[in-house]
Amino acid sequence: MASLIAILDLKGKPLIQRSYRDDVPPSFIEKFLPIILDIEEEGQQVTPCFSREGVNFMHIRHSNLYLLALSRRNSNAAETIIFLHRLSQVLVEYFKELEEESIRDNFVIIYELMDEMMDFGYPQTTESKILQEYITQESHKLEVQVRPPMAVTNAVSWRTEGIRYRKNEVFLDVIESVNMLVNASGSVIRSEILGAVKMKCYLSGMPELRLGLNDKVMFESTGRTARGKSIEMEDVKFHQCVRLSRFENDRTISFIPPDGEFELMSYRLSTPVKPLIWVEAAVESHKGSRVEYMVKVIAQFKRRSQANNVEIYVPVPDDADSPKFRASTGSVQYAPDKSAFVWKIKSLGGGREFLMRAHFGLPSVKNESEPPTRAPITVKFEIPYFTVSGIQVRYLKIVEKSGYQALPWVRYITQNGDDYSLRTASEKGTAPIRPM
View: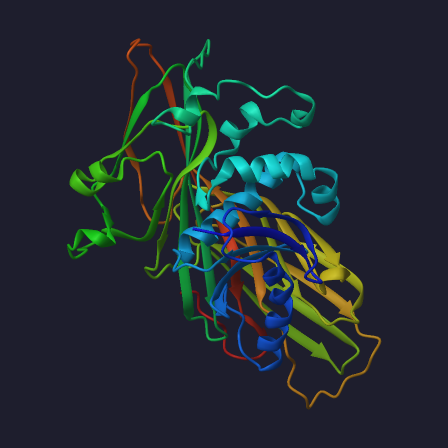
């Protein structure tokens, strides 16, 4: 529950505000930024929620804006924070960018959206596709509709009735992003898999879908112990369309999907992961005047798979110049803005390994007695038709009262996450690093 919602600039000035209850004066908005600054000056971490003078402050930051909720009651802080995130997502979907200028140019529409999304401090409709049916970019010029869309009063608020397609199709993508850190000795010190099941539904009527995953999949709340090669999912989050009661009962993922594109579920796996793409570099410095690199890449996945659009970023000194490259496959480019060179391989087959050499001049002579400090090697890649966890869709059933036939399409993708790093660049002459 929130008494007041406001959007502020970085100076704490409110750009727009809406009061839903009368128990928190708007003057508390002006106290928000000074409180933040006081907390930072004390060397403490600013948390999303804190209380002052009997008022709860809950906030998120989006770009150069603060989204702030105030409440005097003992509110559900997590629910309010989620609402602020949903509000920012809806505004981005409406205006493409959520900045000060877009707030000032569209304040009429934003007030309408805030009134529809929250009533008397309680979150209501937060699905942008439903909101767009009756609050359009030109909504301030239109007459107010007497009857709201059916989805607002329906039990299924995320899907409208009367949807029709000539061709009924469902596209399901299982996407797993691998985050990893390998230390200088070649050991994996941190790894995780962040998974998401994303869907595009172009189905007529009000269909019910049932999704079944392979028997290896286990959820942390089952209470069973994972054995063998079982996949134990953690931090599982479902879209609101999933019938959680049925899932808790028999682990069936049953739902009436929204129309179009949405994320059905997300999950995390903390099981140890072997590096899918291994990279190491031998570095040789010549009296501080030039430096040479020999880089090896090894695809450590099955031969029947291949990685596409592989990009290997190898760091170099900031003042490096006169680059020369020779690669057994792909192309190499110098990226001075990133202080690195990039080895690009369009297609890397499983089990394959390749070498490349790089040569740079160093105009600034450095003290060779000082140990070099190097940023890690980072890798980007995408492996289609493959999941590192082994998760598979056993079935995707589509049932609709009219009995039409629909085509389900399933695709698997494994890719790098936000942090796939290897600290495996070593001085030439040291013991070679062995891939894990």
